[in-house]
Image 1 (cartoon, helix red, strand yellow):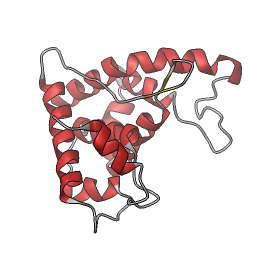
Image 2: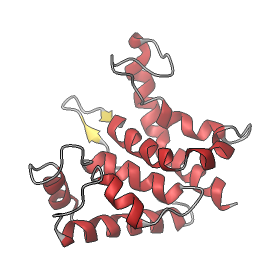
Image 3: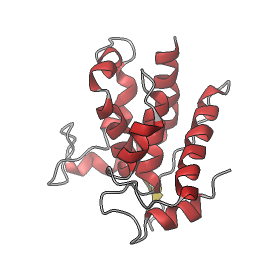
Length: 175
């Protein structure tokens, strides 16, 4: 079992590169790697999680990330699949899934052409919508054009849908 607090403390520390993922986006990234339509080797995705800078990273951190990958993969292999994304929580109590979704989409960006079969699928393309809903442009506007006054409610609803969507994505590629 990964000590998520210890890993989060390290990833959030000054010991990591500026473009290193924190725990929520790392978890989303790993879910995206596990759900990928093609196998992506750790030699490629682990450095991507650190912004390309793995040298100097303690062995226990790499081991913890590989263990997190294994835990996510085992959860998705369960029947029914178990998906427990690591989202931030605001002081007001609502879930913030934006970083997690950005991490997932970073994994998708490693093999964008391979993901087209899902995203262009008439039957299952909708599975990525709860993730895409959380993507914002530089001005903080929804890339899907969701009106600002409706955004909080849409984001909350989409965050609740993410576990089922991820399980569906995983199963889509395994069929």
